[in-house]
Amino acid sequence: MNDQLTEIQERVLHHQDSTRVKIRFNDTDAMGIVHFKNYMVYFDDGFVSFMNSIGGNKPIEQFIYEGFGLGLKHVDITYENTAKFGDYIIVKTQIEKIGKKSFTFFHELFRESDGKRVALVKATRFVMDLNTKKLRDILLFFKEFLEE
Amino acid sequence: MNDQLTEIQERVLHHQDSTRVKIRFNDTDAMGIVHFKNYMVYFDDGFVSFMNSIGGNKPIEQFIYEGFGLGLKHVDITYENTAKFGDYIIVKTQIEKIGKKSFTFFHELFRESDGKRVALVKATRFVMDLNTKKLRDILLFFKEFLEE
Amino acid sequence: MNDQLTEIQERVLHHQDSTRVKIRFNDTDAMGIVHFKNYMVYFDDGFVSFMNSIGGNKPIEQFIYEGFGLGLKHVDITYENTAKFGDYIIVKTQIEKIGKKSFTFFHELFRESDGKRVALVKATRFVMDLNTKKLRDILLFFKEFLEE
Amino acid sequence: MNDQLTEIQERVLHHQDSTRVKIRFNDTDAMGIVHFKNYMVYFDDGFVSFMNSIGGNKPIEQFIYEGFGLGLKHVDITYENTAKFGDYIIVKTQIEKIGKKSFTFFHELFRESDGKRVALVKATRFVMDLNTKKLRDILLFFKEFLEE
Image (cartoon, rainbow over all chains, first blue to last red):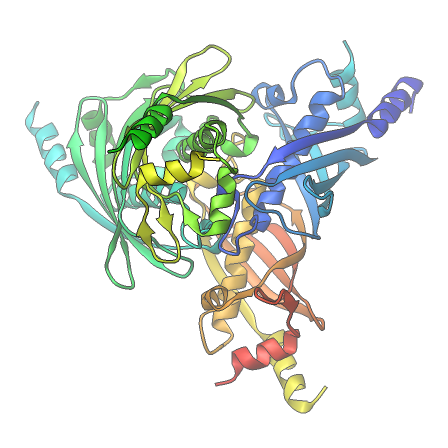
């Protein structure tokens, strides 16, 4: 790996993001708490926020319109506490590992009111060219995304 | 309007469909009942079932892959009763009115257990060519869809 | 209607709220735009924001935990434009009409980027005591909610 | 562990269930495929179907109304293929492991059209008395659920 890619890797691995999500009534279920599926929506907010705070040359939202998908390969969620309507969730995000064709995010979700962790997520993503269905090299993707 | 189109209009206006939807836990909210947004998903099941039972030459699901959108212009929902996890909903669907560029569905949603009506929906849809963004003539759309 | 209730009615009818909603990737569908059901979630954000900006003595989110439901009786949505991933929606909310046992909200949803209106909503709600299943008188509900 | 509980454990571990889920338009996202969060809804359909086909003395849906929650502690999903509007998913479910206070389901999700596996899920659940917030012993829960 050349120096420039090493530098990009360091930059990406050191970046940390924190974003705040408001729980909607619509996120709850008949147990009175947030339905387990919605944590997938919250950590995805963390992913979007992370990608938009790392200093790329365009909003991550734009990639989909340019024919790139940032899909999921694997998700591992541990539920530790519950959240309810009116709570705010703080999603802390960093990248744990960068592979050749995939990269793994580590998200921690906290209940803002008392700081208790509600969930822990590892999510492995890939970058796909939706036209050719080919996977992009992750560091080359970040090189392109991060350079002016 | 020529005879053939009049005949198609009659056929479409006389068609009736009934489909059965199982309520998921995930459809409920903290009041213990189905969240109001999910009735939109149930009447859409009624729409899909109606279009697939009228005798078209392909599944309605295929239109989206051929570049056609059957979008919504207007929805009017009256909530009359509630439904909960474990209930089944019967969605009865017919077309109330066919305009030049839009058509209006009338859906009634019933709780299967006791036959009580839970909601009443009028939903006006259009057919759009997603490439040209042009609206299709509704009767010509049905002519094409219904003929062998 | 006594003077105090007239005053409350005036206050409620003159209140206006504006809130901002970020469109998630998860809100889109295979047509590449926000799925029609999600406008129900956005105007509900407008409802929550309205109730929390009018100056009540507690967050509206708390009512559900005290046994009150603010349910929907009728919703009328007109779709005028589309929204996509990355867009922000501005939801403008006011109350159009206060009846004895129900009240009707008027919501306008705008695309922030160009100010175009994407949807228009009239939503009639009631306040129910979830234990007794009795409907509350709307002005008395606001009297209690608004007084110190 | 006494003979009766051993027998129950054997019965539960040998039970297998298969259920069929229709993909809704509403399940897709702007990439034209099922959004990753919805696999959580599909494997939950597998869970409900499994519990209702094992021969319990009441529908699993009823537990929530009797004050029991069958919550999630941990979910591990591997995404292998995609699914789209119009597809049917076959969810195959069995229990992989029964612990003292939790039990782990193994779900495989297949695309009906070509038999390709779209996802693989391990989901660890617990049974909680929602009033006391105490976890139930899993085998005792099944003993009660399975006996006449």
